[in-house]
Image (cartoon, rainbow, N blue to C red; front, side, top):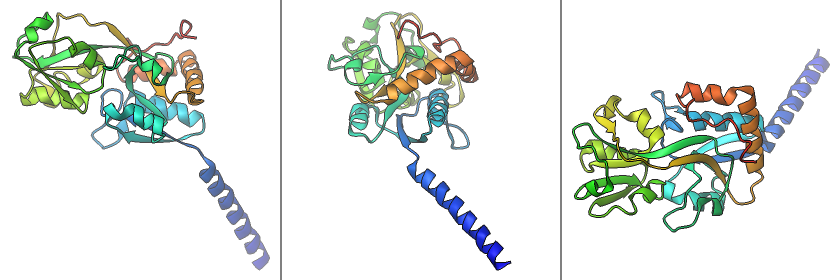
Length: 263
């Protein structure tokens, strides 16, 4: 009996040792994000959810990585990824534009295929006047996220108080608090919050056309992860999983599932 018990104990210890070794050897990938519904946000239970959140978890899970999310200051995204404190920027990251220093973002990081369309838009209170021309912003306060694509839109606005804040949600809150009349944010974010809950009095301004944007995942230059994620995008587009997740977050009209012209 003692011999049998010893064998069982030995088997269990060996199995635990193998499991522990496998766990220690599992690679961890750290994803930089900001609070931005419907891409990455915390639900009512306190869980981090969103299209980008779930897609990242599925992709890296398939690739054998343990996923860790790190809330970052958007203006520090390049230093975070280049220093290695995060492995990628996966948070509704507009790829087809330059930053305020005039340098194209694609010169600073390696991007995955474009997987989502977007545009900048203007949020205002439903009691605030609609604007159809940038000249009408004179004498108003406009909030926007520092180092975001919104900077390109507000760059040539004159006679207005341009308020750079830490996140798009902070820009939205500036409007609800009355400390800004307008907020320039991503259209996908605006659609997810305007007219709902604490933002019931917010509406999307109509009348100013803004160029289309494309989201991609940003990696440190030379990262081997870029090609791996591109392969997963193609795979999930082909098996319908990408479209299904987009539908869950009401993004089926924005998701891109054909990458033939990006290869």
